Length: 198
Image (cartoon, rainbow, N blue to C red; front, side, top):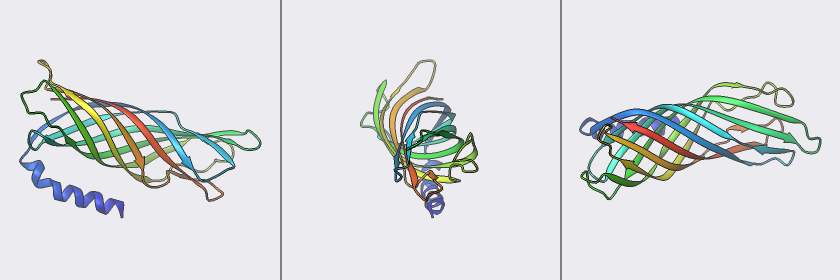
């Protein structure tokens, strides 16, 4: 169902992309994850989640742009059983596809462009490993949609079209992991994003 919504969004936005001014470049993100959980048998912790890839920005007009990112991402869940204190963890590697709107009240002549951003992403699990104890044989879900909101600034440079720095919050809309007892963990993430746009 979520894939259908993402595809429908792309189809609707395609005419806007065709007439827009396009910039693209590398993107490096550092996130920190934390989890909601439905089990009392485990303590669950997140951690640092880096990612890297490419970002494309389509400037529709002076106040609205579309930002699309394709990222290779890393995440992990660390757990401790209670009682017992047995530790286990699962590491995941993902392909993330994100489409977001960038909203700014500044015109093209400004060198500093504060903006807000809101959009949707989908995280596709490609590798899951690391479990050695009670999580052996389990991994992150195959794909999980999420929404993202945040604030940032774009700085226009003389040697580079633009450098974007933003701080965003990602809320995953489905559990990223289901434990053997049927309980689950939903992920949240705070991400510092740095992109160069040419």
